[in-house]
Length: 343
Image 1: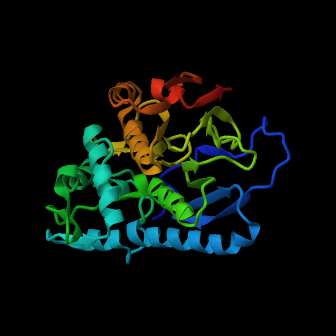
Image 2 (image 1 turned 30 degrees about the vertical axis):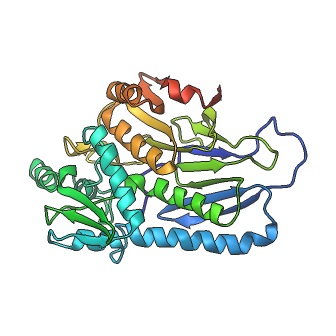
Image 3 (image 1 turned 120 degrees about the vertical axis):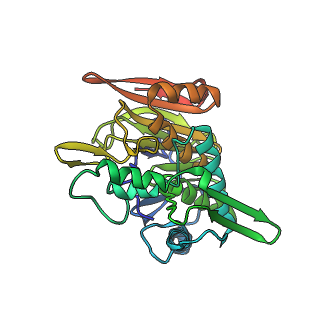
């Protein structure tokens, strides 16, 4: 998996805040690289002597995830499924079946806006392992890619014997980059629990999840970044309350081609990068995976449709929209319950 061109890191982790003044044991911070992005784990009340062993266990877990769902590694489970030019069910792990099942469910609720089968479109526009094209794809190329796209062509089979993925289009290309960071973040949380650690904040790229409290016995707090290249420009701060959070946005991940800005957010309905003015969608959900899936779908839908869906599905959502020389902001009632303040 490689997210360099897929999902921006739009969340600033703030384990210790200005109000946390009491001298406490320093948190244990581990970090590294995975899937073309960075991971970070902040732990409270953990013996520093465990650092090396935890660092190794975390990296091994993320390497396993990358080896399963990467489209950049030709030997991954997902790549082998994409390379398979047939329609027979292919065996996968329970975790892989779960990520695809959730993605299909969110895809259906977003009317196909979040579509993990849009891999050929992602690759066509230069956001996959092939790299950027020399010129914008023409109508025929877009039509050909769209012909091999669609949620209805992918099926998850699960029974007592195991799990399988099945496609009824041999050329269907599944891309899990839109949910991979949330998937990996949830696995880090699971690993912490297995290690007997109950106070942690974990993140992979723009997906974050927390449990318990920080080293100052305060809630873990996360800051949503303003749509700017300045790393520490804070839009709003939230108390995750043990939930996952993820942001998808268009203001950093793009490239210039034929004199136009090409966004990484591709609309499966048109086969082209989105043209609307929604620049950022942040979602808080029970898991980081679920938040990661919803934020992508909302970004594709645009401001008006994203608002309507957030209200219909009772989602905790924060939207930032470009308005003239500035930005407008909207949050759902569900998001307000997590809000600490707004700067």
